[in-house]
Amino acid sequence: MKIIAVGWNYRAHNTEMGRQEESAYPVVFLKPETALLKDGKPLFLPPYSNRIEHEAEIVVRICRVGKNVAPRFAHRYYDAVTLGVDFTARDLQQQLREAGAPWELAKGFDGSAAIGTWIPKEEVALETGIDFSLQLNGNTVQVGNTRDMIHSIDNIIAYVSRFFTLKMGDLLYTGTPAGVGPVAINDHVTGYIGDKKVLEFNIK
Image (cartoon, rainbow, N blue to C red):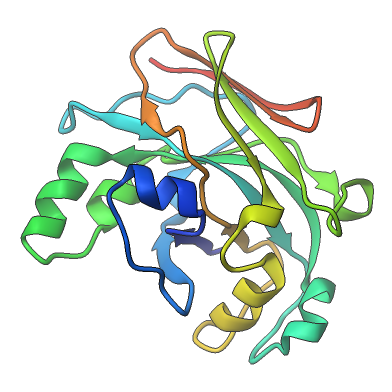
């Protein structure tokens, strides 16, 4: 099982992070399977970072094998969506970027890919966009809609499948909107698709 993630996919988030240029293609990175955090289990903050930040995003579940998928057929390759959190060790990421090094240590640590309860894609408004939000201790910190993506779900699937063969059970994190920020010990995280709560866990 692969965890495939996309960065810089919402303009407002790019602006808050000081990124001006817009990539013509999805910015793709991978997380290891050990990054997966599910079933409401807590995230234990790693000791090597002083700033772990939440990045809420829509996640899709790949349901069939695919290679060089055409964009017009990409909708056939996933069967469910949920809300996930791509946790980032921001201080470590900044150090790595300044050194011109890859981001994996800042993005792929254990528990850095939280995942919620799956919703069949037929039950969400793919055509008009999926509303989603993240709350921290009962306060809404991120709000997004997939219609604001720079690169759509279908286009991401088509692009990624040029490089990696997609397999059943692979997860695709599609990018985060504005509002990213730090989490701390004893924080309570909840996530929603529309008004349906699909994600809930604690920070330890």
